[in-house]
Length: 172
Picture (cartoon, rainbow, N blue to C red):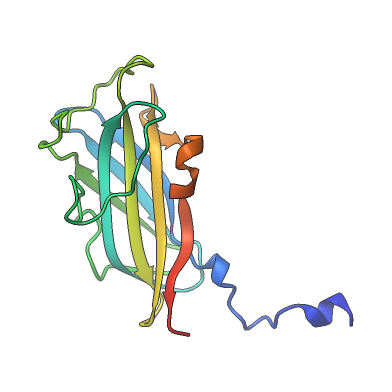
């Protein structure tokens, strides 16, 4: 059988390409700090956002991290509204303020902490779907990089927390 004959038909959608990407994330320092991030839908299908949870954390480099969950800790669940549609090829800019109830009172300085002090992390979890009966997840945990104030450093132990288009549930 030829290789071309084994290829999937062109009308079959590759599930690995169903994803929303956090294309940019940064922090505006202050008390409280403000996180700005961009959701990008590179697919040629629309997505409906089901739920989201984002937060700014402060912890030592190398510490174990977890993704934010609604009702746990200081997750912000209204940065991206439930039911928001993200059309094919579009972007959505979102912001939120760091929770002031944290031990660092939501304050992020404009200068980098020393290597021995706690550092700042941006983490989030986004659940979305193309249609009912399916649930897809994008998640991230990234350290704030100074002086750019971009959330782009993925530590080795946090690599498993960074996913794009992970199918959580599918009725099909």
